[in-house]
Image (tube, rainbow, N blue to C red; front, side, top):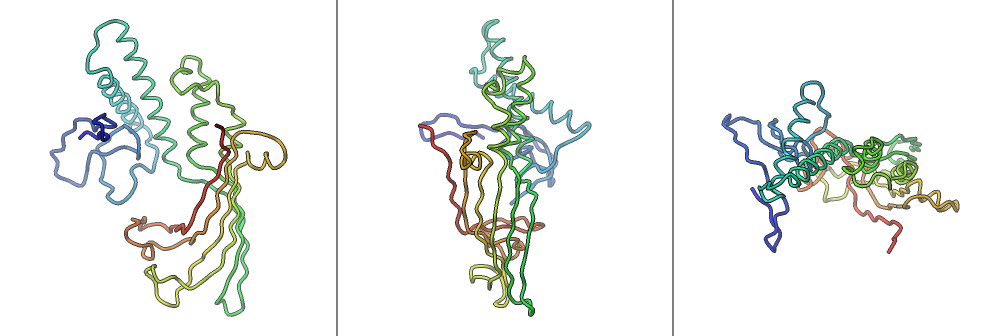
Length: 267
């Protein structure tokens, strides 16, 4: 299967695979957005991946990653290698694709990781409650940047991970770690949720800034400041989330009613 843009340029393509088992197993990306394809149990309606393979599976994962990188690099070169220079460029491209796919796959496993402190007030009848949550954490962007920096410390790997010499490890931390404050209250569930009339849900206003923004406020320029503000319904069970959103049936979900992101603009 080939994905092309309106001009006919190939954007992505699947490798050639066969499946003769007629079972619940399918060929799929090992992790969402990765180029590594694995024969695993199907995951309809949910994201691919979710855990880091270990032991023998890790070896198979790495081999598959290199194999797919080799196929993609060969395709990029027009399926032709005509000289020794072409061989050198091909091997370099295979290494670049394989390393970047491995980094993206590992980083893609992490959604968000936060530590938080929560305070809540409830009336005597327990019909109303209000709360404040302060959290500090990070997401996959910081993990990916940190992996690129660490691999970039190996001299021979420098050219394969996107100019790691330009990555400041302090900026990785200040750009990637966020402080989030949420003020919330319990209200009657809106009509668009699949809930009874007496059911209450938590709705909060959330403001999040990274440490670079805090440094900027304190007069210390560091990294790229980012901020996020929004209105969110917290910890909804999957049966209350509109079906079109494909919520994970085994987890609670946050449903954002509004979210805006702001960051420093460098023309």
